[in-house]
Image (cartoon, rainbow, N blue to C red; front, side):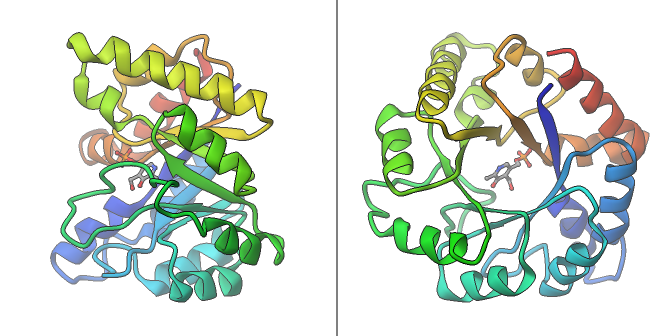
Length: 238
Ligand code: PXP
C-alpha cells in the first residue's frame, strides 16, 4: 500500500496571512499523524513565506512518523537540514516569483547536484529529487546518487481530464517504471486532489504520495482529521 505524506505548508500560509500565531502547523502535524499520515512534509522556502525556522525545529521534536524537508539546493538550507536531521530531504527548484513550485528540477542544469546529495547522505540523510516525468531526468537523478525521486504530477493534475491529461499520465507511468528499474524509490506529488488521486489505481510503483493544498483546502470545510482520513482511504483503495 502506498504511503501518504501530508504537506502542512498551507496551514502556515493561513497563519502568515495575518502574521498571527495560529493556526499552528505543529498542531496540524499531530492531527494529520493521528488520522493516518505516514509522513509530514514542510517546505522551508528561502523567503520564509509560509513555514518558518521555528516550525521545522518544533516539527523535528514532535513528528513521530517521518519528517520530510523540502528545500532548495543552497548552503543555508543544507546547514539547516544537517542540524534538523529530517528522515528525508526533497530537493526542489525555487523561484521567488512563483506561487508554488512550478516544475521539477532540471538536472541537465543542476549538474553539480551530486555534491549536495553527498553532503546530506554522508550525514545519514537520504535525498529525493523532485523532477518532471522525463526519462533523461530520471537517469540523471540515478547517476547523481539520489535515493529516490518525486515525480512532478502538476502537469497531469492541471490538465484535469482534458486531451493532454492522458499523455501526461502516460509519462508518469513510464517514469515510475523506469525509476523502479533503476532501484530508485518513487514518490509523486504536486496538485494531487481527491479526484486525480483515483487515476493512480494499479500504479504500484509509487511508494508515497505527497499532498498538501487539496487536503488543507478540504480541512477548512470538513476538518483536518476527516480530510486526511478521506485521502488515506482513497490511497488505500489504489
Ligand atoms: N511535492 C513538492 C515537491 C512540492 O513542492 C509540493 C508543494 O509544496 C507538493 C508536493 C505538494 O503539492 P500540493 O500542495 O499541490 O499538494
